[in-house]
Amino acid sequence: MDFGTETGIFLAYACGLLLICFFGKLLLLPLKLIGKLILNSLIGGAVLMVLNGILGGIGIILPINAITAAVTGLLGIPGIIGIITYFTVFS
Image (tube, rainbow, N blue to C red; front, side, top):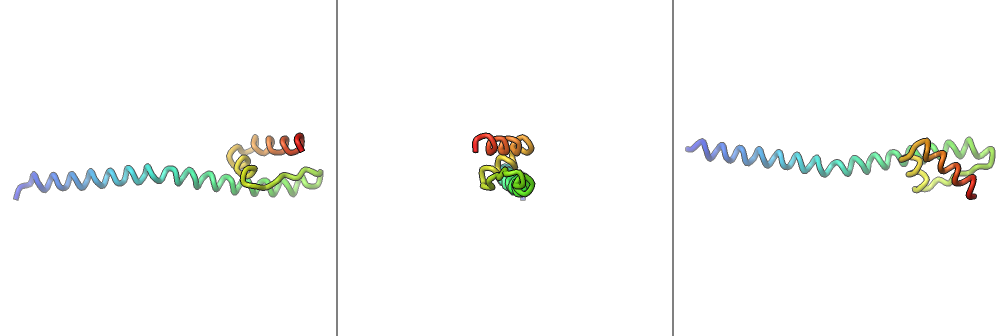
């Protein structure tokens, strides 16, 4: 039996496993990004609910929908200030 053939097969399997790991990691990155965006949007919706409770006493009602939750979740404090400004000035 020749050791060259066995070594070649071993190296082919090792390269195949490395390629599978590389492309698997490459495919998981967009899923992590989408998961992070969804989590931030849920947190943004919760913040909007709290703000509606606080600001409802002075007559400012913020709509809670996918767009406002995403803006709040993605931009954070500047997004909240922008949404409050938009709905107080233009409403």
